[in-house]
Image 1 (tube, rainbow over the protein chains, first blue to last red):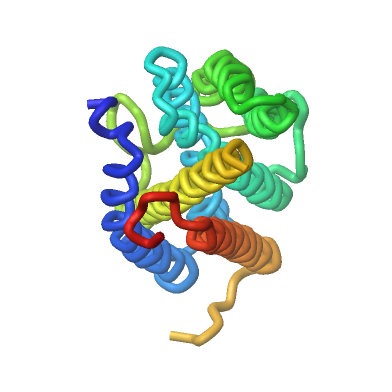
Image 2: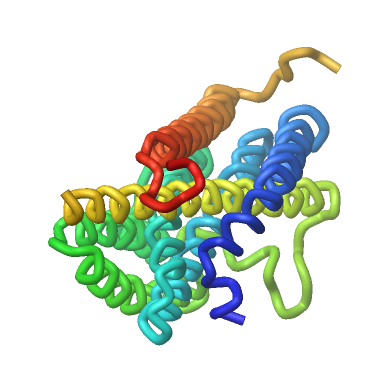
Length: 242
Length: 55
């Protein structure tokens, strides 16, 4: 399967058809979620209106983690099979994952002030582990940029991405393992979500919408990288022939 | 339904979050699209390969 998908021509043809569908569905679901969050959902019983922030914060937190897993998975595929498209995927995911992680941290901090009375708590394992993930994204990009060749950049980046994935279970289970201001999991639980459907449906719709938008942005960024590598190879060939 | 919904005393926090999300994702999308167009333009401007039908 990897070899089938790793063909750049096949990827370009497939992604060209997929992109508009993903953009349209993603933006439509996000619009639905924002409309529900601002106009339809009643104030939460304990938190009041400020709970509406969670319709942005939770999808961004989900994507921050999912995109890191995606980046580490792509890095693993590159490391084993050396498919260039896997390296392109990892490289393309990193800045977009960093944006969602920064958004998660910012929105969480803004939600925390009226809810917990503080913008930031260094004792909170979840906050700190998500901050570490932002540094991993930034470090990944800086490391790649510092390497002399594309192969070295891919190798160093892949190692960092794969090692850093250990942070993901730490983020997920930090609320169970450590004392935290965050509440326990309320969506992904063994006994089902503890949230009422009027909150859960737009929240999941928003999460799916952001996931589709993120996938579309990654595909666009990957297509850009494929083209840029084609351009640099062609220019190198021209120089060699001159 | 009001055009602009009214919230409790924490309205400013809510609006800042939604504005921040719109702005950051909008700028990210714009950056990705502009870069994609620049790459396509650069590829299109390459001279045709020797032996290709365009030469």
